Structures are given as C-alpha cells and as structure tokens.
View (tube, rainbow, N blue to C red):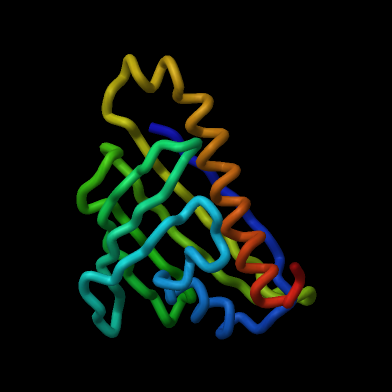
Length: 146
C-alpha cells in the first residue's frame, strides 16, 4: 500500500473552497487528467460518484463513496469498486492567516504485489503529481489565475 499527502494554501474563504471540493462533477473543468465524474447518488452527507481518469493514455475507472464532514471540514472518500484494490483518503480544510490550507491524502494499492514492485514508484509519483495538480487547479479556480 502507498500513501501520498499534498498540501496547498489557497487565498480564499474556507467555506467556498470546501464547497468546490464537494462539487465533484466540476473536477474535469480544472483537472486535465479527469475525463468525467458522474454523481450516481446524492445525499446530504455525501455522494457516490463514478470517475474516469486518464493516466498517460490509460483510462482508470472507479466508483467511490464521498462522505462530507461539515463540522470538521473534511471529505472522506473510499473506493467501492474499480481498477485499484484500495483507493481512499481525505480532504482537510483549515483556516490560516494566508487563507485556507487544503490537504489531500490518498492511500492506494494495486492489489497485485508483483505489479506494485515493477511500477509502484512510478504510480506513486503519478498519484502525487495528480494530487498536486488537483490542488493547483482548485487554487487557480478560487484565485482566478490562469
């Protein structure tokens, strides 16, 4: 199993950024690797979403459950089914003097030890790059920078 953590400070209000993170259908608008996100089920406390992402020409598809913790300003997500054996983590949002600190944590596992040995480090770099790109895209969207 691998774990990636990315953090960024966005010059914006926590509530606005938390709302953007919960609006998963809009992720393809600011994330080039995400082809589509479809909400399968919407509840007050979360969603079930189908994702199609493209990593170096390879489509990766999964269904995840997203749980919104409004009190603690967190989003927990976990794989329900898809191309990885494990894919889960959380978003955390905290006010700072410079704006809002956003942390994205991803725990993932192929479930195939021999494949993980061969390309695990490459996948970890890709997941880190993708997480950083997601946070940068959110920052650009909030701060209005291109």
